[in-house]
Length: 238
Image (cartoon, rainbow, N blue to C red; front, side):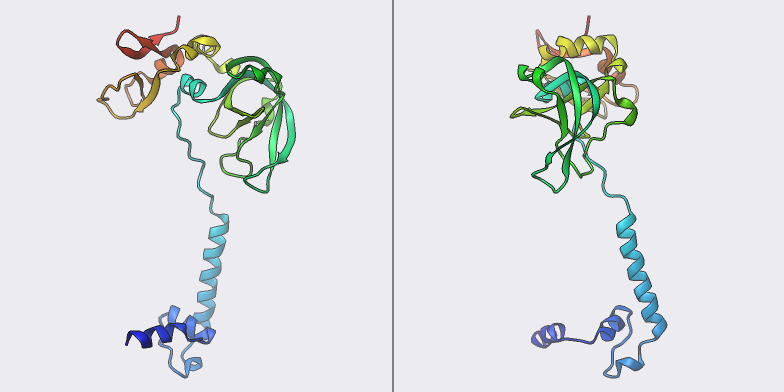
């Protein structure tokens, strides 16, 4: 019986017979008499609709595994700078896709973290062009200073949608102090998210209280995770 079943699957069947089975119509040898033309039209319409939905439905959004605190970006990036976006430019073809890299001419004002060779960099490029994680700079964002935290390797400065790219003027005074030096003092510490209290303390780790009633806003805008007498802890930036 199993052998006969395999044989039935593998044998060639007329296309209308296949449609009849998909529609739940018994396919007799006289299959042409059992298939209603309207049934076939409905089936084809349904298939076309599903295909169109597959084309027009939005793709999965870029998923970023980050901690929304400027120190986390500063310490977990290989490059962080204060720079002005000047204009869009075309980069080299990407090795990971057929898309050409979208780059941006920048003028670096100061290196906040990373290789001193960053001072000679004059552009920042997309690490993932043609994907949901491609960074696209806003049209009204040129001529404005930004803090840019990304990756720097082999003389190339790259970012993605998950990178920290924030207008310098949006930083609080304490965030500016942190970016210019205080955050680097705590790069031996770890920063993790606590979404639901109570949060168990973790050695050498500062927990971002990202929940209703938590201290997240103050931690993000005014504090740094720095080494202390009993490990790492949140400290006010002064």
